[in-house]
Image 1 (cartoon, rainbow, N blue to C red):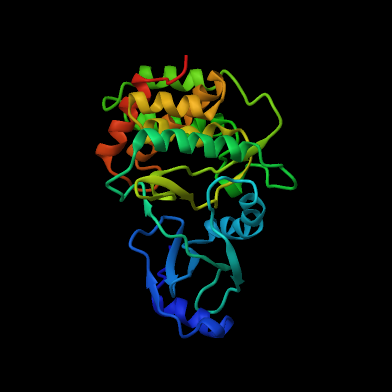
Image 2: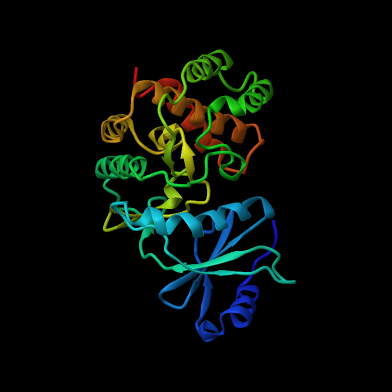
Length: 291
């Protein structure tokens, strides 16, 4: 990770886009792990990868988002310009239109059942976008869109480390169930990081979806993990109905949710609250959503 300050951003803007050099620059309140985001005046935002491993996401978004936007029922980020690396900041970076709203993570007035329905409808629409020359899931998407077995070695390592902390046999059963099927159709678009910090709301209603850095073409199972990371029992059922995907896709989705909870709890992934991951794991083990 590299330190990215408002001063660094101002220098980049002044050098490469002097027409915006007089606009105020402020970091957003909630920063992501992969990128740092700064407000640029009232209508723009600057998005900068925090490490080399996330550069592919910025470049991909700048190419894919204008295509996806024309087919989706909700706003997504709109790239305005792409910046060059410099001696002070070594990666490409992007300027986008600012999308107002509060993240699901920070909003206190979210209509959760409506969110389940609206998010399911958005993901169903995303699957219908023509694939064109979109990128097939792989390293650029951290293997979202691929089969969850790609992370089998991490699941086993995490279970070895968490023996005595988690129900290893129950986890192994869920993981084995996730590996019994594969996406049987042509690849479709997936987002790759459907999470509370990447969903914007207005007056408690889903109003935009952001952060497409891990998007691509492949198996959409990876986009269903919010069934366990956020939604409660009845909300999961609403989400399931709105998504319109077969039960075997949900078994792979459950595997994705299990993997993330385990590797985070074992310290093999980005930091997160141990209490939160324990809650996610409990929901994963208790509720398959589909049978």
